[in-house]
Image 1 (tube, helix red, strand yellow):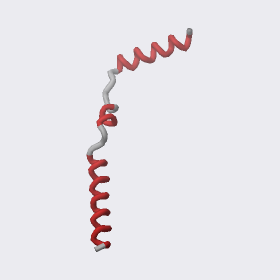
Image 2 (cartoon, helix red, strand yellow):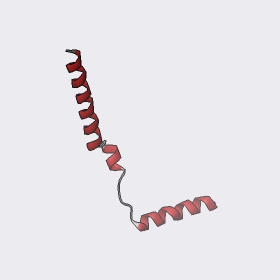
Image 3 (cartoon, helix red, strand yellow):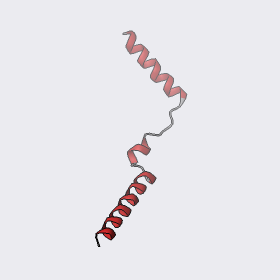
Image 4 (cartoon, rainbow, N blue to C red):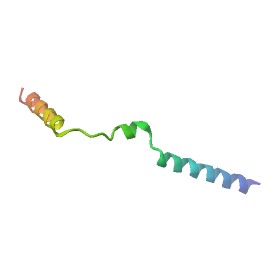
Length: 53
């Protein structure tokens, strides 16, 4: 009986880990966005102006 319970617990844990790796959290997915080169250049110019001041 204990062996069956232990195997079931291991299988459930493995399924949970597989589901977590297959479906990442929404905040991680939201961090993968594209920035245009003009926006990057504008941000660089702002940082350089702030450093020069």
